[in-house]
Length: 202
Image (tube, rainbow, N blue to C red):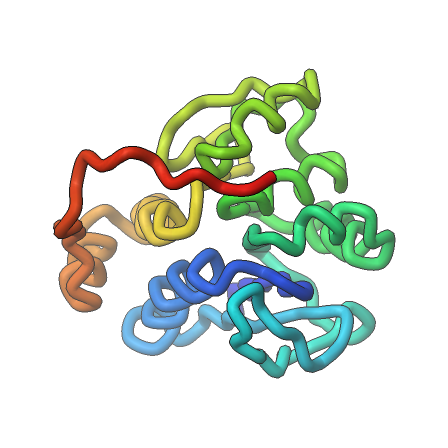
């Protein structure tokens, strides 16, 4: 039986929020489990990211198949897309029947708007932790990822890779996750560690 993985895209999504986890889960589909089926979904077939990368989505909200796992990235677009009724309706519909509900970065705000973070522990990008906390019904944790029930949220951008590898360990095994992690040569060693956080507008 196929295991459908929906990556939900919208205007001004953050590229690595999407592409990082996609690399992990799509590589699993290609090399480990042929039943895994990752695909992209957007309101319009062509969607442009916050830094200008244009993606042709596999499906629109109208024709996307049922998803077993939903991943919602973040990015600058979440500031306006949180009020996009069609996007929120699709996320709600897709997540209601999904086994796992996930987000990266400020995608957490879209999950919250769709009704999936109330009463949950969650995280988001470091610059938005207070805003997530201010929603009042989310227990915010400053972690790379937070797993609560069938909801897994990741902190900003590159943390989505960590979350995807963790999820692979849950769904398959830690050893398979370690093998794939080595295969994609994911062994972070930033050249400029312990620097002051970037100041982000807004």
